[in-house]
Image (cartoon, rainbow, N blue to C red; front, side, top):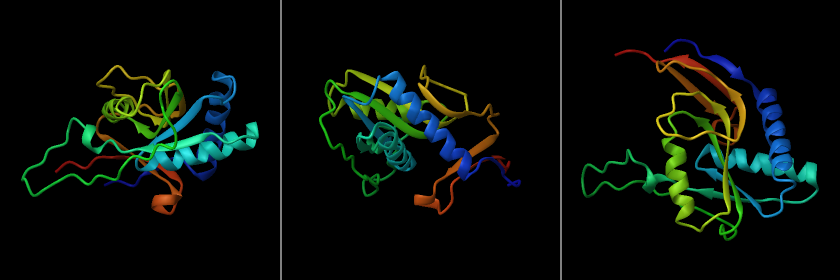
Length: 183
């Protein structure tokens, strides 16, 4: 692999999340009836950070949940009957029916992860609206999915990889882009 180029550092990620928090509040005219739902794994940490910023801005808490999309993925294959997918479980603090759900993820690429998350959310209730916030939108959609809130648009080629790292999981806040290596 070539050396990765950092496209967002810790400060840039913080600024992007602050801007998204303001946009969420503005678009929804506050946070009444809203819930942030992070897609495991990194989406939940982004959702928690957004909740902190929204609370600082609005002076009130917004509910945060997490959704595990493992069983909803269209690329899930189990080779043997002894092999089962690792289920991390969803934790939704409140009923989703008639709520505005803001779905949070780190990188939007083909749209398949978001499609799986939409299915998982609908199995947990019927929200009045679902919005999508992503830290990075890299293009190359295979499904008709478009984010409502974007930290940064990063046009990429299919032979590039976007790697989002968050301190809670990776020990560092950083988004980088690098070339795939050919075998």
